[in-house]
Image (cartoon, rainbow, N blue to C red; front, side, top):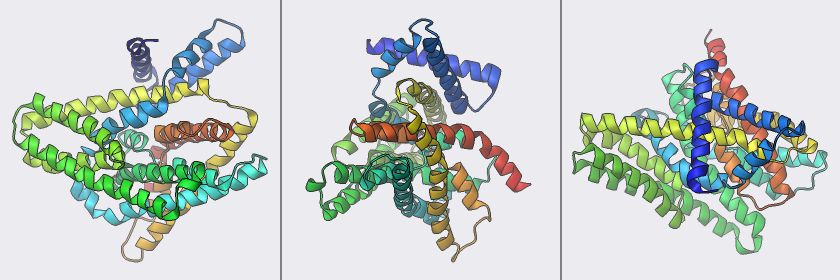
Length: 411
């Protein structure tokens, strides 16, 4: 199918599902769109089971032409991260730099190890013969909270500014750290003879630290260019070039594209917004990136919902996925609780901060994309089904219950 036809179908579905949600259901857009896409997928499966038409076959054919990993990790992600970082206040972020940094680094490492260990034990009990290093790989892909899902949900719930900053800041940076850990473990799992411990550590530093430094350079170049012109069309185009060209160049330089774009977005959204833009440019730039954010979020969550049609959901995989949900939440509790507990020795935190960070740490498309990037085989099939079940639970159950939970904790 031609690319234009493919885009037309996906955008039409996203628009239709968004309309149905807004007109009749009233859920937060991303959650509502994904829920409708899931129901749509189940209806197609049901029709196929009843022998009515070949709708499921046609839908599977359509989805088979979409490489979700490429679409998200090398397409949408840079736009969504930049749009999110653009509206984060750097001063607010710097107030909580220690907890954000510890959660995005120590927290992800702890979660990777705890999840990997618990999942290895679970899969052994379920008689899946999967080596420990691959379970750590699963821990790395499921541990980062997804900034796209997190920020889309936080827009719809009433939450204290300090907590919102912590959750948003963690999600913006820990996905980049998680991807780097995933890439290191992927090399160790599938090419152990080519990667030593020292090389693995060097790879992590190159990706993570290199991403921060390259993002700072991108942000400065963008700031300089924006300051030297006063034409909103040119300035919007410059930010597009910054995102697309910067992300591509970061990957070519083997640095973390997600981290680089977040850093650049923070610089443009703070120094650039104050010192390099007129009021007119600021208004048009904000409107443009908010629109990009909303459109791509709708498309992304439609694709997540439709992915159900092409995944293998055998009874064993479903059992593993359902049992993995409490294990992942428990791992999140420890990986958040330990850093917060250490930091409480020096400063005060809300008594409910760990509960909110655990329940508000949503998983999303990034985890699915990383699972899809694994080499084809049983390990990939098991992890992909488990990841999908955890992501759906995270977005639908955690996402929808976050606001009531906050209200209960406040009351």
